[in-house]
Each structure stands twice: as C-alpha cells, then as structure tokens.
Length: 421
Ligand SMILES: *[C@@H]1O[C@H](CO)[C@@H](O)[C@H](O)[C@H]1NC(C)=O
Ligand SMILES: *[C@@H]1O[C@H](CO)[C@@H](O)[C@H](O)[C@H]1NC(C)=O
Ligand SMILES: *[C@@H]1O[C@H](CO)[C@@H](O)[C@H](O)[C@H]1NC(C)=O
Ligand SMILES: *[C@@H]1O[C@H](CO)[C@@H](O)[C@H](O)[C@H]1NC(C)=O
Image (cartoon, rainbow, N blue to C red; front, top):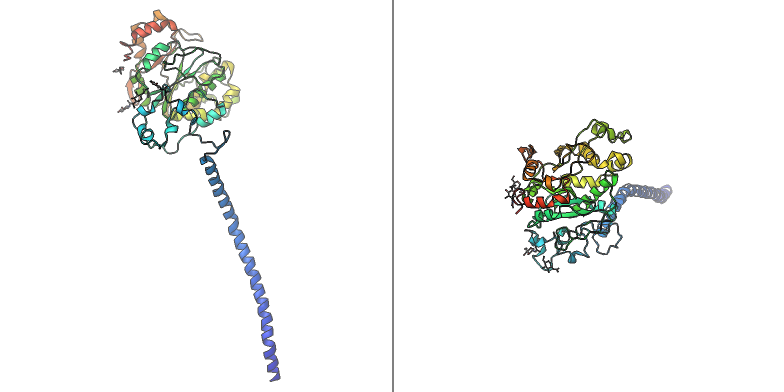
C-alpha cells in the first residue's frame, strides 16, 4: 500500500517531468519547423514582392505628373506639352480636319484624350541626338490604334543650302494638307529664310555639319528619320536631296508609297573596287564580304524599317569605325543592314531616278535646255518593274540632279505632263 502510495505519488511527478520534457522538445521542434517553413516560403515571397513593388513604383514614377525636367521617366509619348497650344497653326497640323481625330479632339471641351500624342511635334527641338533616337525608337505593342488616322508620307530633304526646285515642290504639295509632313536638314551655316506662307516654313530640324560621302551623312539620315518618327501619323519616309524633283502628282506618289508592300532600298553586290573594294575585313564576323551591298542613299521606306534604322546599335558603330572617307558609308550602311536583316520586304530598287550613263564620280546634271516633254515622259515610264506583285511602268517617282536653271521648264510641264492639279 505504501509502495502503491509511493508509486501513486511519484508516478504523476515523473509523468509531469516526462511530459514537461516532451512538451519542451515538441515545442522546440515546432519552432524549428515553423521557422524553417517560414524561411523557405519567405525567400521567394520577398523576391516576388520586391519585384512587384518596384514595378509599381516605376509605373507610378511614369504616371505621376510631378516628374522633373530631367527625369529619366518623363512620359515619352507626350511631345512638347508646353508648346502645343502655339503649334496649332503649324503648316501640316490641321488635326481637326482629319476624319476621326475629331472624336478624340473635339468631342468634349474637357476631354483631352490622345490629342497631345497625335499632334505633330515641332520640327525644331533641343533634344540631344541620344535622346532623339531613344524617343524615336518607341513602338506601340498594340498594333491597331483605337482611332482612325490618315497616314502621312514624310518628305525628308537632306540639303546643303536652299532647295533648288522649291516652287515646283510647293505646287506639288498644294491642296494635300494632312497627307504629308516635311522635314529639312540643311547645313547649320545655311541661313536662308522661308516665307511664312511656304510649306517649308518652320520645317528645319536641328542639324550638324555633313560632308558628302562621310559617315555623318548617315548620321544626318538617321536624324531625319528620327525626327519624322516622332509624329505618329508618318507611315512612309522618303529621303530627297536639294536637286530632287517629283515626277508625278501628289495623289499618284502618295498612293504608290502608302499602298506598297515593299521598301525601296537599292542594294546590289558590285565586285569591283567601288563596291566590294570598299569593304573592310575588320568588320568580320558582324558583316561578311558576301553580305556587303552598295546602293543609292535615296530611299523610300515604311515606319517599321525606319524604327529599325534609328534603333540600330550593332551595325552603325561598326560602320562608323571601319567605313569612313573613301568608303562612302551612305552608299553601304543601309543597303548592307537591309540585306542582312530586312531583305524580305525589300524591293532592292530606289524610286529616285538618276543618270550615271556618262560615268565618273557624279551623275549627270540637268539644266533648262535638257528638260523637254519627251525627256520627262521617258524617265516617268522608262522601264518596267514589279509593284505589289504586278508589273508596272511607274518605276521612278522622283528624279535627281536638276539645277535651279531647270525650274522654269519644269514648272511649265507641271500641269500637262506631271498632272499637278
Ligand atoms: C491660323 O491660320 C489661319 C489660316 O491658316 C489664320 O486665319 C489664323 O489667324 C491663324 N491663327 C493663329 C492663332 O495664328
Ligand atoms: C482645318 O480643318 C477644318 C475642317 O475640319 C477647316 O474648316 C479649316 O479651314 C482647316 N484649316 C486650315 C488652316 O486648313
Ligand atoms: C490602296 O489600294 C486599295 C486597293 O488595293 C485601295 O482601295 C486604296 O484606296 C488604296 N490606298 C490609297 C491610299 O490609295
Ligand atoms: C494625278 O495623275 C494621275 C495620272 O498620273 C491622274 O490620273 C490623276 O487624275 C491626277 N490626280 C490629280 C488630283 O490631278
């Protein structure tokens, strides 16, 4: 009995001790388990939250109106909010006259919608080259815009000084407002003025020195493209020189370019010294001799390719380094780039006629006496070529090397041969 008593006495305390130890151990292991579990879940969760929050944070930085003037995240697609009210009378900016833009712009007084984005930006600006190219390289990921818009053709003039056939171009553009944009890149030293009534008024873009055949000629072309890309409605891009003339009326040229399924970049392989001879083997392996192409710099391209050219950070630096001076990069950079990466939609021909038949480093120039109706008819339908899968005899829309001396004759043929209205 005593024993039993004893047992009864000690059993519970032993049991207590045992259960205390057990509980302690169980507690301990539970803590370890909970901690370990939390640790395993916590690490990925922390990374996830960190990423989500920092994205939110960046979105907020982009959306917040209080960005500073130098903010890296200032909204890229709102061109020049501070000068928009003063550019309404810009020569090509009658947005309200363009069909469905009315919906966005004039429906309600308080609604601004996309109006800032759709308004053509001013030609002159103070962006650095780096800033300009970056902004021009933006592409909307949604293909179809939520409004109708009339596509425009950007006519980009790369000139030294004045445009030799300006009055002919004025007649060409007359009555076609809203269907074109004009950009002029002339030498910084050129100080000629343009009458406010002219289509060229206020269309000069910031420019740098350009020498024939040198690499900065390509820079100027990229700069013209980038400026023209800033305006969303520009869908085709035409590079022209000061001696270029249009060979057809506006409606013919507009339809031809806007409806084309191809780009017009001349690109051919020339085995002799002015072709392959200009290739620098140091460009290997990025550019191989078999990929090297030559072609006229005067192109007609669509927006997709224009964006690719201004965004190219791979080939351009190599050309800058290894294709200078007598290499004439303006005749090789774009043809070679297109031949390597964008050949599928290239027609390999240019729409700008020029006469090399007399040989030499420069093509023939045309003065007043050279311009006859037969001559113009001849170059307008000189040969046949392919257009959107059909054969056509309209192979050249523009022609090159017309002096100011040819202007009067050209104007006299504008109505009956070129059919300007
Ligand atoms: C805008 O241009 C029109 C003609 O195109 C002119 O009548 C009008 O006065 C101009 N408005 C301003 C604010 O310059
Ligand atoms: C702008 O378009 C409107 C039609 O929406 C037209 O009445 C007006 O004359 C145009 N202004 C200019 C300067 O072309
Ligand atoms: C393009 O071609 C189609 C027919 O293929 C035509 O309906 C359309 O009007 C053309 N576009 C322009 C801008 O002329
Ligand atoms: C433009 O020229 C074509 C012929 O090339 C002609 O059929 C058309 O009527 C002309 N357009 C205008 C607006 O004069």
